[in-house]
Length: 145
Image 1 (cartoon, helix red, strand yellow):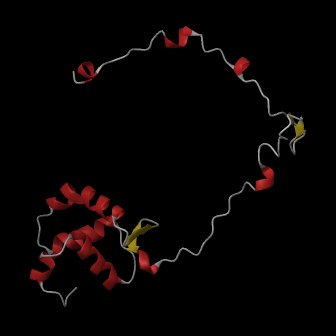
Image 2: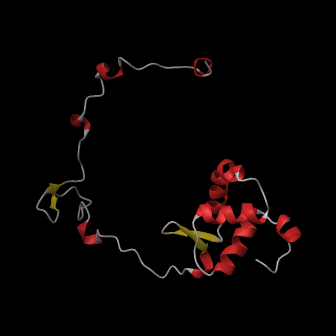
Image 3: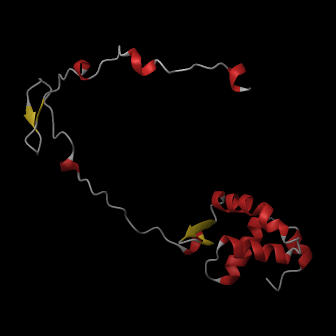
């Protein structure tokens, strides 16, 4: 950052300054250290850190040039995504192995029987008004009060 004039830094956004800081640093930095350096470079009052660090964090989080790894901001271009996340549930471990189109009862891998014409209407009673007795409906005028 020493080769850039203060006047040039003043014309850059916080995100652009962060990009230059990380590019020159060659390793990740935490949010407070990054923003502290920016405040120092721009000779802003120390209260700026407390007042604007939340907005600064949000701006980094939404900028595709940056990535947060283990609590440190770094340039995304330094990190590859060659890792594959393997789902622990394999296809053969599905809840139902298969239900035949003709309604035939089949067993899943656990020995449970299923059919495709399942009636779920007996599973719950939607006429129970006791659950709704404490329900209060508000219109927009009530919400503004």
